[in-house]
Length: 206
Image (cartoon, rainbow, N blue to C red; front, side):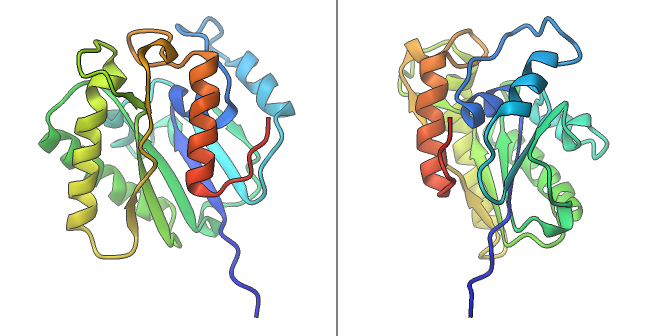
């Protein structure tokens, strides 16, 4: 008997787009139609049984609105399955600075929405924003990284066993960040892609 196929969707924001594609990201965005990203994704090689949606500017608070455009995606890649067919969801967590308790509360609200939109999940990975090892860094993603990780651990611990999981933990040197928000350089994006794809056992292309 063949093992069931894992069908993965990745749901995130601009930094997610970077580690998904291994590419830099122009910020602020000069084209509100996201034409450069759409053109790139149209030619980007797909991994088997994996698709992605990106809601740019996707602070965690926005995902608390079930009508947030991110759920459909400002840009998408390889959308071949409806949500009821997705068995593994990787949701990337980021946003403005807040306390661990606030991160946890916001994550739990979003999880409720995700479970409604994706009713047949076997695994829901909560992926912390890519961070860094330098505790003195003023890059927002680096500063938020340990708090998102702590909050995710707490949410997973409070949940029923087996469904919620913490995603890949990636820490980069300061030079791999291109701005104070936490967008990645070309090198940072490539390094993150390799690490994250290996963690989730996704075929590495590009």
